[in-house]
Length: 156
Image 1: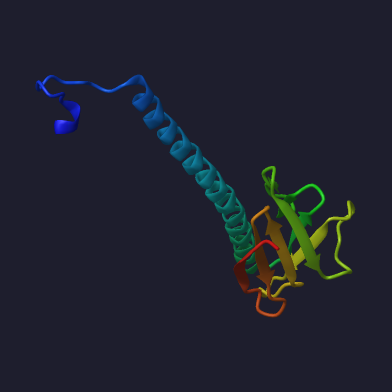
Image 2 (image 1 turned 180 degrees about the horizontal axis):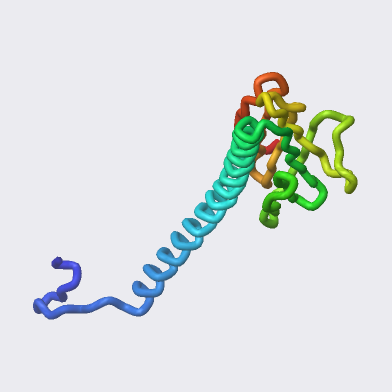
C-alpha cells in the first residue's frame, strides 16, 4: 500500500502508462484464450458430428430389425451429406469433410456410397471418416454384427 503514497502520505494514483500496460496484457490474454477456445470448438464440432453419424446408423439398424426390412443409409462424401433413404439428410458443417469406404457394388444412382442394413441386423459394412483440420473421427460398422464403433485420432 505504501507504493501508492508519496512522502507526505497523499495518494499518487495510477499513471496513464501503467493503465495502458495493464490493458495490453489483458488484451493479449483475451486473444490467446479466444484462439484456444476456437480450436476446441472445431475439435468438438468434428467429434459431435461423428457421434451424430454413429447414432444415426445405430437408429437405422434398430429400425431395420424392428420393421424386419432392409434400410439403406447413403453417404455423399463429395457434398458432405448422409442419411437413411426416405429420412432426413444431414449436411456436415463447413470445415468438415467426409470419406466413405464401403462395399464396392452398393452405390445409389447419384454415385453416393450406401451402407445397407439388413433385417437381421447385419450390414454391408462401412468405414466413414469425418475430418477437420485437427482430427479424424472414424465410424466403423461391422458387416457381420452391425456393431458401430467410433474412434478419434489427431489429423496428420
